[in-house]
Image (cartoon, rainbow, N blue to C red; front, side):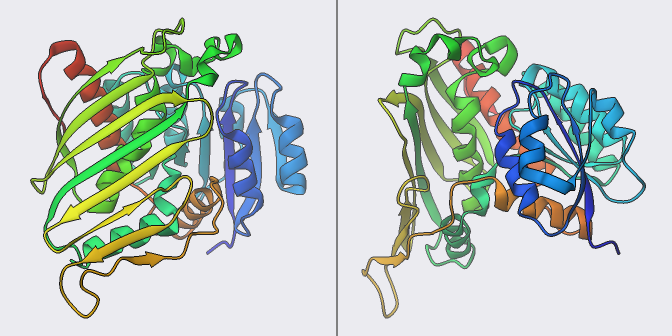
Length: 347
């Protein structure tokens, strides 16, 4: 087995988090030669600076980059605006690459489902970039629940709130993620989707029904929501809520709390990065236990490294195509519920 895996980076001037992905590649000892598709000439200098001699070549088009992929495992890292992403993802899969793609990867869930089918039929990974899954406090919370420490889950509460300030910037109004036609939605599909994925990942239960409301409460000249609320039913039978919005002057407020028949846990994955929990039975019953705050920076490096390792070794990926699809189905289910006034079945 080779000890390095070639990588194709397919992006554009409006690609999101590209620098973070490049840093993740540079930090990995199993990242092989990197081929960058940079049609706008926006990322080549940054890629040379970060990747140095790992950058094998810079080409104009995704097709030209994918032509350089050799036989054997390879990873395509794709960061395109959502409206343009599906055919790029399809081309990478057809070229034999495993795929890690910037979310949401589509503006209609109907455009993503065939990509999942294609990836599954070829036994290739298709992962949206839900990097929060790999945070130590998230993995510890998942383990506590899986071990039964909280008993049967009763409910979950989530919020992810960012700054309204960015929405007042005229330059922001021109970005693809500020346009429903180009992004598929606003805060919910750009940021709230991370917490929807975490809710399912931490509890080990898929969302099977969703309803909700969206609005532009800040009044900025945008045709996407800056505020969303959702009510969720999970496959295991418990319920959850999500608040997703641009409300602050700066920074983030984040919260994830789970209640079970034998205890509870809560955390702020963005700021404190500290897990707290309490159980109702045993030698530490009633005591609030704490996992020391994580020193892991908020970055895409762990996700990139885990994706490289899974692709090279044909191991379990950080998330599956089905995981990615279920998060998208939930977001678009909330949007559909807003339009129709009816709770939507997910999946």
